Image (cartoon, rainbow, N blue to C red; front, side):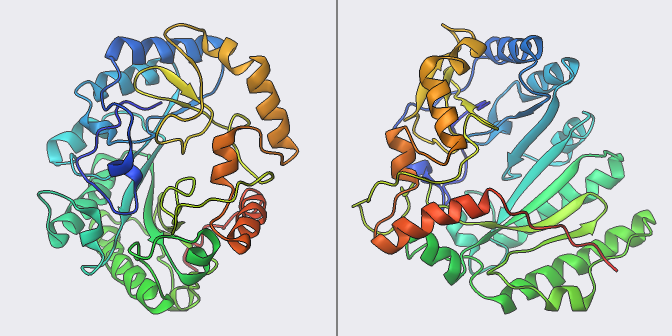
Length: 345
């Protein structure tokens, strides 16, 4: 559920600046009514408060999160952490949160410029992220934190034909240096709070291969992980000619869907421009939208690896025959494989 598609960053690797739909904030009453409807229909036990945008820019984010908790829904969201000063962190960590995706993404001084983060230097931003981790233990909140780093190694780039100006984690040695720095910070947290936790070993770090990706638990409930770059349905791919796909793996409608700030229900959590609207929750019950004949057709075809919606065909297509084939096969693989979290020995 998207609280807003407004963001105070303008990351090069995000389609924010090419998004054409109107920007706005979900009315608080609509957000609460959607939460009530989801709870009463038993549609899910967890809500992700993102699609596009920074959710903490919504003036009533706390009330909305609190309402979700009252309906026994797990609170999950991703954030660039720009709003998370100590006062806001105290508010946030007073809630029984399930998961926060900490969107670090650009972990080096040389790549931070890709965030186009107004008001932050690289050093100030790293301090902010570290403070988010520190306050988790100070508040004794049991929330799970995923600290994401953007993986743009050659294997990933070639698979999706990623635009040439989007370069973050490109080589194994840089990735190892980044992980070592965060492990050293983790040690200070462990010592201060007496956590008795074993960080990843030098051998663990030396085993890093960006081609495979990694996920290290550097503190209890804090995972430092790579996130493969995406072209957002080929919107950030090289070139404009897309060969449409016709098969591929996806969790749309079978495991997730999205509700945009204006109430439009889209079948895909990556549909940044609202291209796959199935209905509007202000006009039609969520369950009725999800059980429509067209939604059922899309869902059943997904289970067979067949693409129905034109946007899905664009997303799973490619700019060359090679990327067209690789993306379709690759999405089937990535929707069946799982990278295990590595803990210290």
